[in-house]
Length: 444
Ligand SMILES: Cc1ncc(COP(=O)(O)O)c(C=O)c1O
Image (cartoon, rainbow, N blue to C red; front, side, top):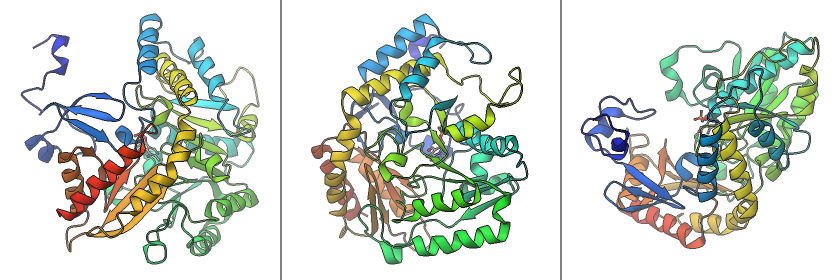
């Protein structure tokens, strides 16, 4: 069948599409399809409505198919479908960059655009190297990541990431990378509400050790997610990010916050940098930038980095980097509409208000079977389900599958159910998410 009218038909064969991050053979034996979405809900091919407890994949912050975003994309697609940003301009991209200025932390007066979170991370890592070179410190080449960090799947991001099963197929990756420990301490911090109390002491020592081992003058940047997302939703212990900032300042190391998950309101402020009161030098973002409607990523660049790069001949390319889809007109149209929706509907403020009821509801699962930790910050959450011996993560995956059958879409990563509902959620929907997980845990 050739007709594009058939695009929505459930196909007879699922062979040709190699699904990303998916056990393909297992999925294709028992496939599940979403065919439509609106607001907080997906619709399945069987016509059921499924409550989306993870905002698609941490991205649909304003809810699905928001009419203003849909309209902006439609209009732009009919006017200027594509124009490169290599040596030529189109208004939407400059208008978007200016509009974004209204919500970024002070000093982040420039944005470099990419097509995804992975591209944003690779851009930030390259920018860190280029920045030090521009300052005459090209010997700073080490990049520091963190255990259980997730920074996408490009070679740069994967090199600094710290989830072993996602890295083991790909060899040694970038040289000169080291990892800080992760921030999870279940013994001392289990069931912490918000930022845990313990851990900064241990993490401070580990950072000192790492600086001693490598010599700080060789380090270009430290990259962390302010709240590790795919590693299991791990809020930073109190004082930890502040300490990282201080050490980076002392040693002229750039601090990169990967805010692909936390950006655009997830913690009740535009960025985690504002919500947590710690300002990095570069901020990567994607996902909620366009409400997930068109792929887009970006790096918010602090003046300190930008001004160091704007030197030398004006005829020279200052940063030899960029993508065919950097500043894609459709993405820019979606991104401007998305920012308007966030503002006009007060979604960041709504997320901030909902954070406490969310915390209270989630921690109500404390005594559910197999639940060994619950974590939350802003509208992020995780419920950790103890694995059966020899079957790491299987119980969490089973629990997610039962939730799906029961009408709630959650994602299992490792031992944890990952939760990040659209910021438009109301308290009834939050209770439904939590009650469904509670029932699923009892069925295990
Ligand atoms: C913190 C973080 N960085 C980067 C990425 C990669 O983004 P993308 O999948 O758009 O490449 C993700 C994706 O989940 C992420 O959570």
